[in-house]
Image 1 (cartoon, rainbow, N blue to C red):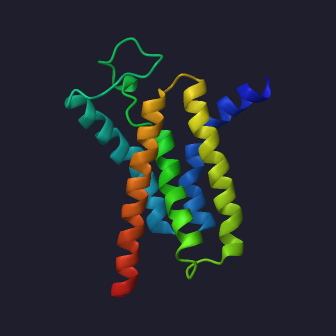
Image 2 (image 1 turned 45 degrees about the vertical axis):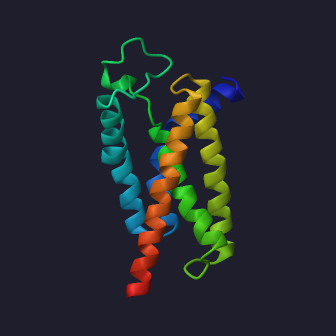
Length: 158
């Protein structure tokens, strides 16, 4: 197996680590729960809703859009990575009161690498189109930003 094929295989399973990084690396159970809910509920409901609106595009390798597994908009693998990455970027650059920069830097670096690998892997293996991957990134950024804003409001209120 060459390096490119190995990255393609590894990228498929990286999203499983994302909630674990939030829970064990950041000790943030609310973020870990959000990430798990995104994979299990938010992304599948979003894909189905986009499909019902007639805006769903099929995955590049699928022939039949009627099969649920062929709904590729937005990429859930990309989405979950961008939720965590948005949170980490905010914490590192704008609100370093909760975590030290020395603790956040290696986690942030790891998640950036994982995000790039997963986005590339989704395109390389033909699981998603460019639009689906970038839609996943946009949705992930929006959910991550919403999470950051609501947790900041909760911190301010308590």
